[in-house]
Image 1: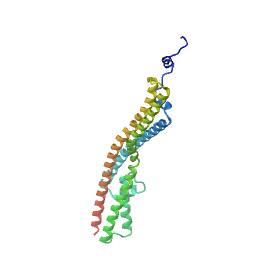
Image 2: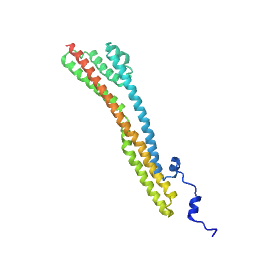
Image 3: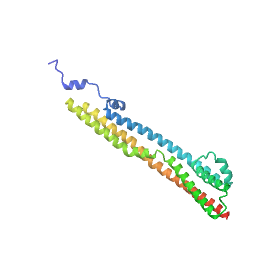
Image 4: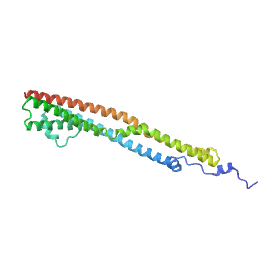
Length: 242
């Protein structure tokens, strides 16, 4: 009788399961580990994009304000062009430089002599500004699609890890023929950890995507407004040459 050992004694003598984040990761199945690593990398990359875009939009907004002050100060646009032509500091200045460069090239070739040539020049300048604006906005919107993808896919990736982990947990329970909490809890915790990471990655990505998309959209509208105003100025200049 003294040598008999019960299952309760074994459960009581076994070390408690490690339910820390590192412990859950190390105890997880290979597929669950892969899911966790994917979500952790996606989360880090998401935050890197968020900080980069937020700082860049703030910097570009300040630079656009400074350029508009110089543009509307009443000074010579030719002097402004000569000062920033080699290295435009921001997209708004880039649009201005592209239009002025096309204006100067046409003037140097004598393409302002007739009404037809002036009309053609005006169309080319508008086209150049549209192309330049589109190129600058494409650069600014880069990586936003990644935020949208993480926001939509991360919860499902985490859910896949959870389902897979629970399947393995039930298989282990069936093999051990033991349904005590000490046996069930670690596997369930590992599985739910994947879902939690999916939400941790997805929620900031969705919020940041909506915020950054709105900020970039407003900045794009500002560039379009400047391009329209500058196009109108050049159009008046062409009319005065008639």
